[in-house]
Image (tube, rainbow, N blue to C red):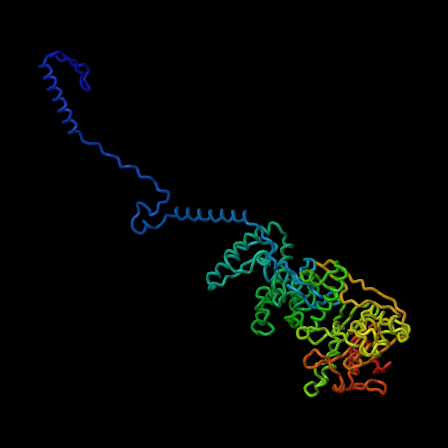
Length: 636
């Protein structure tokens, strides 16, 4: 066999040359022996120790490694703190994001709604309101005593604290957990304002969160004075009163500005805010009355603590008594006054659209100053009620369903000073003074015609035409001269026309509203017209003429009187049981203690009653001021 070059095994230095067959066999044998020896050497070498695989560290070591028993399941302090800080960071981040995204909502419609107020002629005494009973006023019109009382009651650190009180929230949260589901307060004045002005009264956690977020934003946009002003104009005081202005009127019959230097009344109003519905029953619930008195003392003591009230003044204060509550503002005579004022505005609006009418003022925010004087209205009611109280409808059917209308007009201006339209607007909406028109009879119609005509009997068409210009109508112009049933008038129109003669021929158009304001600004003022007439009785003055009479069918009794710059008209009529058809007035119960004279009306006649009412009214308004009461009048 030819020789071959065999490469050495690993570790040999030189190649091996194999020659012939024998050499090859030897080489193979030698190689096998060497391999066997190396294998045995490897088997005899001890194995190296293997390293354990490296464990990866867990981000959250829970359950804990290397711990046994209960410690295996207890988290480490590192895990606890990490989780807490992570959760806190999440809350803070979410809160900041929510605060950034929240938008201040539009004020809710109810919070901005205001009432329209009807005032007496003094512009201070309220008659009634229409709509939501709220009138907003600037902070400058709210006395410091009222501001301090509300702060002492609700938020004494208002001017120094943040818009949200963490301690208050924590206290509320504690109460929420222990109050059987009744969510509690914990709000600052800012939060209360936000709740009332922008949100709702709903007691939920989502609404509370919205309240906090909006409060923080509001606090950065409005001053403390602005927030306090808005708060005082929106809070509820019971009796249907929203805001301090209407609360002062509702509880004490005067505007809030009148409570300056009256901390007792200011503290009373402030005490109501915490529980208005409960404290609103204090007049009938002794428990509520005691709680309200304790709250009142708490408010006053808080004012002393804060330096807003001296201890010496505090010790002299007594718990105030509010005026009686009238749930319906239109009850009694109030409805007649409101109705008379709105009807007057509507009549003018039909002639001039620039005059505010009833639809406009019903939207709220208006103040209607009437010409009515409270003393005159009360005198008219007292005079009529005193007369009607002497009737006996249970025994005498002629005393049933008797109506009286009375109107007093200022002869120097035409302003309607007072009237009696009925016993109660809620039970009789029809106004006997401003709406009920009836025949005046010949004596009264002639007296009215004498004011506009030199000789009405010689020229009745001209006299009737002149009377028509002042609202006195002739139901049958074909009758010349008119009969006792032709010339008709309301007490208002009769009083206004009767002023012409005693007023030197000057007729002032009667009016019931002097001015209208919107948000405190005058937007309309009355400008009644004046007309001059030449009549036959212009010299009748000083004590004035008194005219009495019945219509032809004896269904209407009249008395007209000139009372020292006041023209007065009183009428009386009665209806059948159906309440619609008129009936004769004969047979009425005689008027007791009526000063009968040979030439005067008999005490049993209806004219005696209208005359008695006229002079009773005069006694209460004019003659009661020092002038003697006149004797019973004689027919002209």
